[in-house]
Length: 340
Image (cartoon, rainbow, N blue to C red; front, top):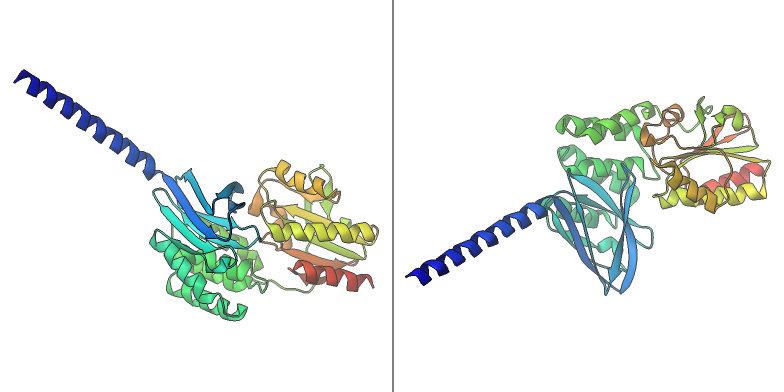
């Protein structure tokens, strides 16, 4: 009888210990976001995952075609995956969410993400517009946001198709952000983007370069007087945006060929000045660079009507705007034509 009681006591103690460990494990898992996946035709490699709002960036390594990524989360966050070919994909992360990604490295646009409703809905939308023309993609995105302003996907679609897009439409982006803010009163990102876009509601591609003033990373005063060359470019960039860095490199090459004919002022969105400084040093760039750590809240962005990484303005020596938000190749061609 005594032995049975001892065995029962041991069993009960073990059961309680097991349940305690299980509860601790569940509690630990509830505050973490997990992403794992498998890619065909990519045995090993790496890509980045970053949060554009705060500049946080991690490296994800692929081994034997598989990868795992995990981090603690305290609120829903939009991450972007940047693949080796520099294409990007949105991932909606939150505490307790576990996602599975499957794709083919030779057809990254067809990658699927499963594990929760939001990411599965984003995958369905992304696959549905892959073969559409840019104007049609904008129309479909606009309809989606109008029909689902309460969706976590809505703000991403506005930024991707109306702000970061080549055919930017800031007035429409502003209206859609206001609609999202009304449907999601606690969405501070939508509110902040509406504030950023409000000065751009009357966005124009012609006219004089607006007056601006700032201090660069060397403490020098920078204003319109620094842009009196035959060709002048103001460009916004960040260490986590490949296209904007591509523009920087192109401008560096062009300025080296025409040192007295091309003036450049760059504005870095990085929260950390040192991170941005490394990129400039790598290309031996010495033109004025503004990095006040305020990211999109930087006053100089509002003064110039700029809103995204890669945004740019090109002017002649009299400050007349000759182009805005040009792709790298188009910007290079515009510079060469103005020099002629």
